[in-house]
Image (cartoon, rainbow, N blue to C red):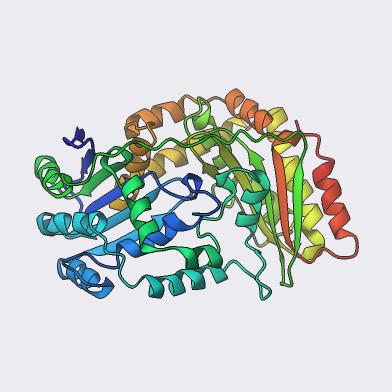
Length: 424
């Protein structure tokens, strides 16, 4: 059930009385896609700063001590297009923990900002080589796909930007994004719905109404494949074969769920079987969907010996084209649907998973109940999966990144595999 408070904040309670935890989460439309080149990284930095103190709790230690004293565990993460802050606790702590959680998120003092800059700069270093170059394949891939749009920004920004952030910048970003119309609250687990809504209303009633922030769509188009090779001294090449796909709200989104499970949902599915079991080309390979409200990317991710980069690339491209031509088998699609249903049922055992399902759906205007989602998945046909694969497997959707040492002509062979891709 969804309840709307007087300030416009939507509160969804998904009670699971058979569980033994309660979970409270705030989902906010914030992240790198709402930033500019000057402010890139500010959403992520602000995530760190929110747990640094309030007027009543002077620093991060006092915040953590107060939360842990009621049995709670704080969590926070910044994605490209949303941020999530959560508190998992014993059910009996909900009345005390909810106003504390709201205070932390609503009244940050941005204490110890210089200390937090050092921490975030350390985090940024994880994606750089010894010369300070970006070598994270995912970051490079997004910049390649969205060179002029904030979806191509890194979530963390860079060290120079982070060191330029001020308390005034944090306050302005907080005021703009952390508002009732731009956020949703989800409470899950062993809670009573009425009591949960009442405590949420008392705790979040002072959150300013604000406005729901729009996201500028990525209008960038490409007419042929793109690729980037980044030389990096390492034991393997990190490979990303990426295809522009459909958005989270697209009519064929559920067909995409089935396509992804047919590609990669365990070791008996096409990707692992073809590249690992059958050909021995990789130890680890995966396919993931990265979806936004107005776009989406299918990423094939692999680590392989440098001289195998072009072979692995061709195998991935051929596999997707095969699906675009013939579609999945009856057995493959039936197994994918069964496993999807099992995973949806298993989600009911986890308070965090339930909150994420409802919170992101409500935040982006695509909320549905679990039964509605399952019915849509059950209705997907082989032809719909085939047609979606054909829609995706086009040269104008393809971008590729190789981070490693492509020597002795391997760079040319990799380029040939990408640039010569004709699609479905």
